[in-house]
Length: 437
Ligand code: HSE
Image 1 (spheres, rainbow, N blue to C red):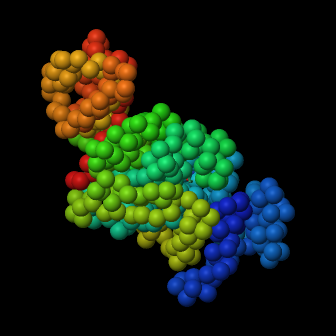
Image 2 (cartoon, protein in one colour):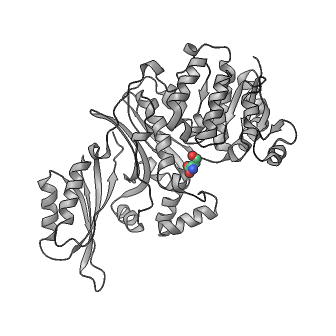
């Protein structure tokens, strides 16, 4: 087997991890592969860092285009992130007939359709295991391990930062803003945490998984995204009293009218394994019609876990050198010309169960008025919790869990509940998923 020559774009956290893993595990990788993978050039804006990590063993440059245009290189590993320069570099590498490995979920979710089309035209591989859930081989599982199945739904904790924050809120009883500061101090959260805490990073990863699961192009622009910034410790604790955990879930389901593609805080029964995935860990549940629900768990970020996925992609590419496109697994599981543009359901069309928290005067008939609003819209109540008013207060918190209904019907019910004279403030709504079938 011909040696695979790699050009690395970016030698920060994941790039450094990739260099370390390839170097440390070279012998085992060679024994598996029957050949070698060698990093021959590294580009990073920080030349000193590049020299330090590679110890002078590899050519370094601060010009990423020198790598994608280097005729010696077979495969470019893009680890610089972002949409703009990364896109140009990836498309240039493809145009130069090089395979690409990328961990860039934002790039693929937003520009993936164009990138895969360009790669198909050139007959090169674009591999991206590291783009979703870091070290968990979820792309391989969805694309290959589950290829016998009709996938019914995918649901995942696919952002470690928010899972860390939610776990700390629950365990320590702290508010979101306080835990975020702590997460930033510990290096879990970025200085600008918007992509993580607003659910955008999770929506990028969900978009990629949904495309593979349902054989459709990337449709990130239609994803519903709601983050964790408005979650209160009160809701996390009430959910816990009722036997639920609150997680930021990415959920994609094939429904009759289209595909649900949504990221939002979600109540999950605490007895589900995925409800017990804590700290910065990730997990994905995939439901196939033949296999049933399957669960994948592991580190969703970090230098070596992410490098584990990058290097596995390099091993695949090394093995596939010289093959034709039809001998390879399709980029997104389904052949590109077999993809269907399935409609993504607006959030108001989605069906879900709900957690509602309201604050009401502690007077006779109030509960009857609330339940009548729900009954009038055929919304069935699953469980209820009423707290005693605090000392000296005349209003009480009421928590209601409902059975499944459509979001627009629930929104109409909430508007009617908020119009009742005994209701003191806006109703808090959190979606709830059983994840059982
Ligand atoms: N920021 C991401 C997370 C890791 O917190 O999971 C990279 O996708």
